[in-house]
Length: 216
Image (tube, rainbow, N blue to C red; front, top):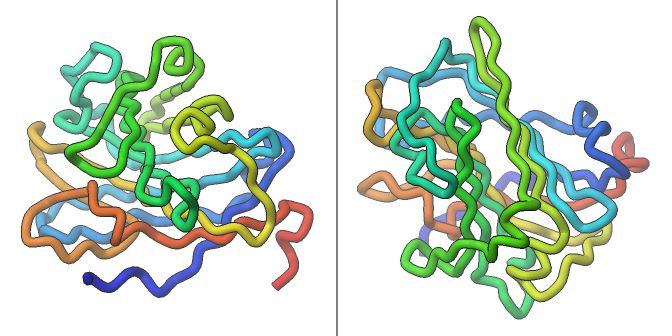
């Protein structure tokens, strides 16, 4: 069994998305399969009090091109930022995780399932409530992701979270086909070929109430 990251990341439970700015920033700086192109990329992740997930990512990359324009298309071929979340790694559906992948055009690929071969799309009524917003600046682009509580419940059969709970997650920066091709992740992945669908390499996240953010 491959070794998992020994770092425990603190993930706050916040009252509203407006509190995300107070969350820790996690750096995507593991380029497990080499390459010289390594754009500075970071992300923040929080659980909201209603059982939703909220994430923001920023990549210092000037005007990245994109071709994929269809919802749930293979945006990983373009320059994309990605958030993978395994909400209940010790629960009944412990192998289930969600993947959310966004290109610079604001196109989102949203899926769930137990592994690379078991990915599924969300039903349309739930999928329409998974929100992605992308903004661009001169030297960077930013992505916001809101995963509603009904998406979490549909995936895992529950959406209750409390301080002390643990989740697993990863952040990625990728361009599978557009040059320069690159594969960046939050955690080290010791796979001989590029593969982000390896939950055994996800990061460990410890949930805590945002009011306790200053406590050890």
